[in-house]
Image (cartoon, rainbow, N blue to C red; front, top):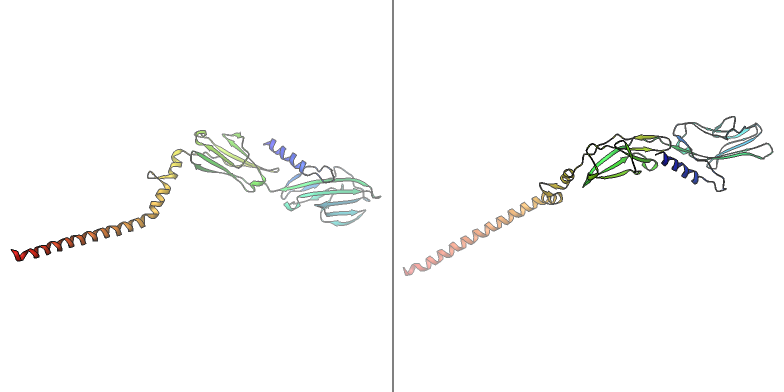
Length: 262
């Protein structure tokens, strides 16, 4: 987990390089609502000096000599920029420049502020599937967090939110939990013990020994089939009745025809 966090910090450091070729320090990570100080690393600000701070190239503080011309944010006696109750819109690049009374550059700094929301407690969602179990680490802002898994209190080599385990790999009593983290916070989900088996997945697919889709067709089409069967049965009965009556009339006709010769 620590290796992943360190790798993330290195990537941020490589990304935040200014186009002028100057190195931009890695992010100053702060949680929303915290106080942030962007300093000049101990530089002493003289009263006659000129000080300018910009946020994403927009001027937020400007002092020339003893006269403050722009003051959207506060500074301390060393010229460090002070931000209280920071929110996510305060993230970005901060650049500070100090000149002496002759206009010569004394010091310049470029720093990146990254304001993040603390992570919320995740949950592990269990889904029994055919011949296995799917585990999903559900967390808010999951695109902005790192995910790790624990199996039986030991770290698993999985860093994404979805985890599939086959039934052959699960033992009775196995427990799983996931942890989400960012650069300012970390929280873990409550442990779960999946109770999936072949019988569980079969029940989803079979009902009374028949495939569930076949049962659905039978149940949904059963009413129409019953009506059709009754119509056919009535038609057959009527046909048989007509045939019997016709045969009886022919028999009576034959008897009448023979009577004069008796």
